[in-house]
Length: 193
View 1 (cartoon, rainbow, N blue to C red):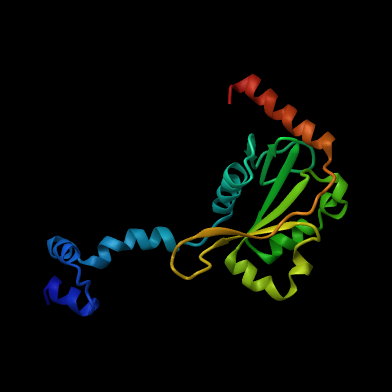
View 2 (cartoon, rainbow, N blue to C red):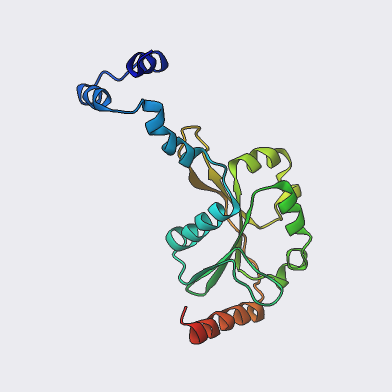
């Protein structure tokens, strides 16, 4: 069977827009081979690293923070993303599983809120994880923590962030924040990065 007949059987309803029709007719590869890289790129599972990038973008562009640091720490807390704006500090913890959320809640600086960094604190989770914990969200997300969800919430293949809960005000551990900033400044002095 020729590629064109196979293409017609695979895609019964082809677009009727003339420009698109001409483009489809000029293609050497069957359409599925052409769109496969796009589909693989946009349907791969969301990783922790993807969430960290989204958290950084959230602090830079939505909250207007500068500087923003990712996965660096000093002392006992190593936030996934931390940033400062004016006189306010933000911490975002990225979680992709219920186990990850439970483990985070057992940390000392989560149990004693004045020991943790960040005057505004958020969890960034995937839409899949949100669906799992929706009925018992208080069990997994501490009181006063804001919540940001990332993923394909409309089912159209487009991933986006949505903030569904704003963070309450925390008393940040300024000593830990200063140690963190001092360590970053020393890194720049030593290594130039």
